[in-house]
Image 1 (cartoon, one colour):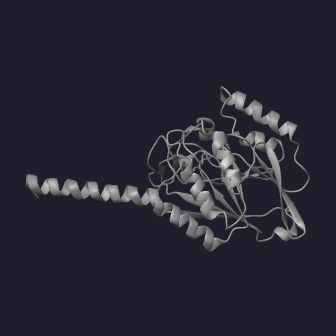
Image 2 (cartoon, helix red, strand yellow):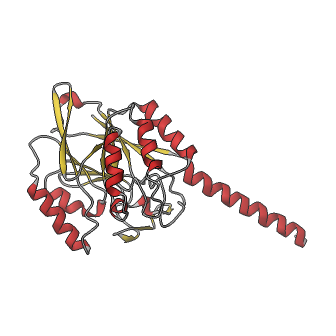
Image 3 (cartoon, one colour):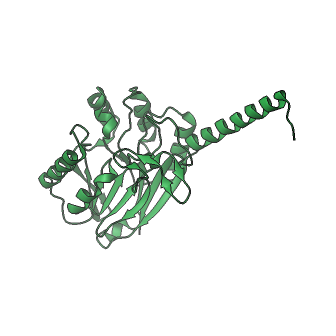
Length: 278
């Protein structure tokens, strides 16, 4: 079949419009991930306890996506919300986008936040963390928090991102030092840590459940293959999303919500994760 130049132009415009629509959908249509966690170390009173996991917000300005996140949280009614870094972005340092969003969800459940590498790459880190505390966010910088539920208790440790160290080995050594200086308690211990690639250090120090982000789901996902690229893991990262089980530890990696250096996602929609204890 022969097409006239005019028809070819129309087809190109239609094709481009469809592509734009698909990209818009894949970058603004929220997905919910759900994982059921079992552990003999969890107090019986925590059966059914629900944790919402938010990561890599990157000062997301999409009102459509923000609205879906709020609706999801209000519908699922988590007991706590954990936020695992890169809430702000080194290139878009309008911290009020993230702060306004946190203020909008603070009525839903207590929030626990750690930094990511992007907080450390900006000059507004301390301003952001101070403001987050003022609106009720529990900011954890290499410190513990205790979550009590009926007559049971679990411990959360929040790891400040080790971005300022020169290389991956230095980061591992510093994280190892931090954990050695902050011995975990008996019982069930949760870790909030931005970077999944440091999982060996996390397991070494006895954490039971880790919440992480950073990998953006591999940015682009190929069916039956997985993510394409992630910071500090390179091409075809192993730990870019989902539940990963090790000998004595489980790790949840969120695909995240926003974008940064690569401004779009392909086959990798923004994600909020719910973890429910059984």
